[in-house]
Image 1 (cartoon, rainbow, N blue to C red):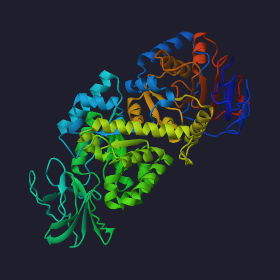
Image 2: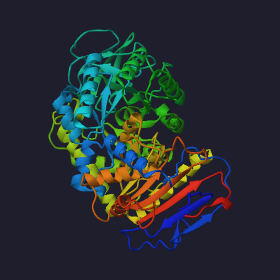
Image 3: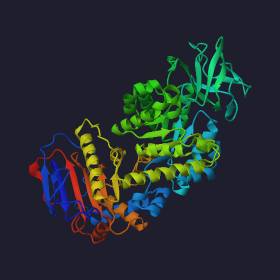
Image 4: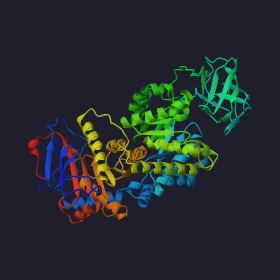
Length: 617
């Protein structure tokens, strides 16, 4: 068989795709392009430019001995997360949970045993809040998580959350929450003191009372408790509780006047001196994500990303926390600058009316998907489970709504960090999200999203169209899984953006990429020593899942790749294949020519060659 050359946009099919959907007629059209068995169909005109991120999915003419060596090498180095493997074995491809889970680590769950239970319960990312505990405590937790990853075969990412500006923080000094009684009188002061003083609260910023008047309302944590300012004593405030409630340590506060937020511009930097010290600590400990608190503009995000690119040997992703009115006003530019977003609903509720939180959450989630950035919805999902073993029905509905909106990840804060029932809370989060995903799939409800075109260059535009089309193809053919081979995770994230029904298995040879993909909806990242021979990569990974008993007769996968062989010409192409797993492995064992007498379809895109150079297939 001649070596394959492809130009323009083309679709190649060999024999037929074994589809589980009898309604699909493959002899008609795929995305408006006619498909003919045993033939080639081309559309479009000569494309200008070069696709630098693509790869020919099948290389013809490689020596068999080299192919076998590549296959054995990949099998030795392929790492499938132990928890995902267990879930896949128990539930099958379509039973895998797609919504990722983030747990905040605190005193209630920092032992090695408790951390392992959280991982087994579904934790994908461990979050460390740098507001609390000592540097040594955080280091110990990070090393415990890495120990579990190494010894137990887990793949849990680590996130540190910067403290951020202290202008909105007050602390009563007690180790746990206090119950504030109605009509009780409290002093809010900027004077420093150790421990706790009855009915006295320490403000972390000296100018916290500037511009505040008698009669203004002081709101704690978006409404957990409310006070009225009854007297101003120089920079201190005497306040009476008008709405009793729970007063947490290091609570956020805001001032309101005549039903409107009192806005004040302190012109302080987003990252404090302590934040920069914590970031250096995160770099030295090899964390995977840094969440920036109180981000008000895109420039601060870009500044941190540039700093990390020069200081860190591995890629650390920067997440911007949306928790202020100003950040909402600059939402899109902040999302574009960041690697992901966290919707900090408690802090956001301090600055906007509570009834606006649901629509704001949905809008942020939608924009993040359009701009291909993962989004974490955080705060108070299961707040009652800090003290009680079962959630309220409203809390379960809140989780379901975030899953229905296709948020990439959901986060536990106090529920896991200081709660009495952290593992139960995680179990509720896991079961509720899985059930809602199953319901959405049964109703065949796709995330109604019109993807924006993000790419400017030809390769990026092609990658987007390949992934958009791949998800439509995967859903229409009811394939069991999508396999993507990727170095930096870009095509895996583009596939995730479209929220396909089948799970996405992302094979990468970059550890930092594997860890960053732990936040992407529906993506199961695997570390693999990928070779230049894509045929060996595909056969090895399929052979691995079969040898582990994770596939059965009739299962099919759709394959997408953006891995560029080091020996490839600059003009390579990105591709989609649909493969029947058992037939494919039979073909490999029989050493038949690639894509002959096996159930597969191959869609490829390449630029730079005139149409006259289309070779035989």
